[in-house]
Image (cartoon, rainbow, N blue to C red; front, side):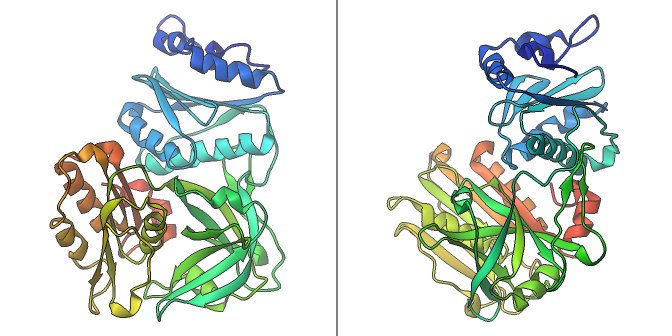
Length: 407
């Protein structure tokens, strides 16, 4: 929409035959206040009108995805929501469309929001084959607003199948939160390669470096943040799932640079009783969450690994029982160890004071999530991630969309 935003009501135009509820609810003082606070500065705005007849079926899935990527959402109507720390993203279903409006006074942030909205809607509604076209202010190509380049300062061997790599860089405090655990790491393909990073475009897409500057990218958990030592750690599993990140980790040396985008993805929630479940990919997140719990917290951590050689020393409250589940040579993603152990947990009577966090292979994640809901655990007390799917690489999952990993 051209020009400055004079009032929150401009976010959604309603007229004859339109969903007037969108415009009416945008007069909510909390929404209007956020909009007016932003209008005191030079705002850039963009909007997308997406033909999406099945939008209602996907709306909550899309909101959950935004929530998990540092864009907290709030419904302001059955077909309407806002997202972002200042409600800078507005989503409204009407006339067979999903209308999205965004605003920011920072060109890089505007492009990052465009990209986040585009990629999350596209990934979670891939089968709908949506055409997402942005109009409005142009920012030109910009670096991702959350991108930082960190450099290796040391490594540790954590048994035969894990390597911890320590990084340093500016503004490490941004990663020092257990509410957001994951980052996307960008790896150069070899030393001596010219440094080049992805650029966000006005189309809500990402332009990747080409030729010798090609990058590999994977999602990882921030295992530990040491602000006093100006460093953070990422644990790499060097097991059977070899790939670009594993190859990079094996050869990492001090001075090597890696791009970090994030943090994002929901982590620890407040509870009196916690249950964690995961395989090697979930282990770093489980360990970090356990270390952050209060001394009086109780709970259970179920961790599936190949064998005792992969057990690690983990800081946890005395009331938290860590149970190591050994596959004993069985391939990862082929056992029921996590599901069977989950069935033997003694849950508290008041499940509203409990929480469940899961990071594992897709099939285990799906079954554990279903069992947790069947127990009566409230939806907002369940945080789960299908970190991988047996038989599919991360690029293959990205190409297939979220249907490859969700229930």
